[in-house]
Image (cartoon, rainbow, N blue to C red; front, top):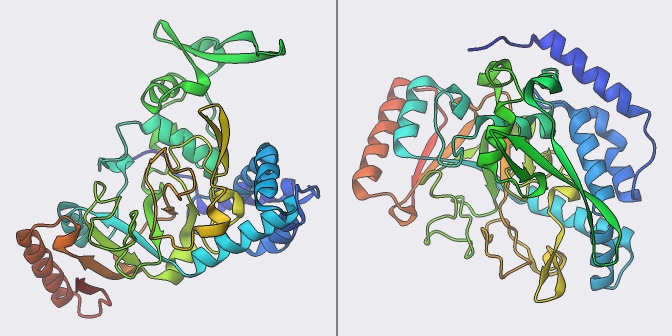
Length: 381
């Protein structure tokens, strides 16, 4: 395990960051200005820099200006009204939802033994990690300021990036950045995660990965279905869209989730994901973006205001439907323990075999017998 940042040191860093941002008074909308009015009252457990989150939210709203203008045009309202409606929708969806994390039976067995979840930086490989520790670590630095004090190597130690100047159809010039490493180049805006991981591995010291490893986020999701359903139907069966991460749905006590979680309406391995506190979600956490389909510009997420009313109804990666929520992701900070758990849901309809269901029931019964004060409830459905 690497060196840790003391609580006193990290609080000082967080306070300095928040103080620096507190002088900023310009916002892209009245909705955001009102949102940030009581920002200083928010507290999150774990290694999270709220100043970094605030900066990301503001930057995302600024960069998506044209998308919000298009959203307003499509909905026949003003940009401010569209943002306010989006904020109200996001608030309502999160308020009605519960917080979950999914695990495999073998992982649950380990959690019952050790009392907490472990992340991929502690030697536990997630099906979603894809062996990309540096890429994920860079994302967590960008999103939460995690190990933000650790800098890249000096540029001369890893070589320069390469930039070309291209022209668009109207003759306007624009830069195109390439990453250069291991003897090849790849466009920065098209670099897949596995290549980005190799790229960043050349640029950061080992401490960037090792420091505070046991404090890195545990990833889950939120759903307004009682058993933690999250798929295109909103029920179980069919199995959830996150069953490949784990077929057992564990519900986190909501008050504990609000104390320690951030969230996004998209997979944070995506480049445009924005996280905001679960206790106070911001509308930029819902991805509004544009794509060109058959020569027409389609606004992904525009139907959200009209017809997305459930966080249990999602669409994971169906490019033909531009209006569906792709993924409701939660990031639990400051470790996730069995003390944070409210209930555990198991079902053969979510991909478990009858033998696995039986074994999980026996393990939970044994755990509760050993820990009579445990408040964990096992529900088979």
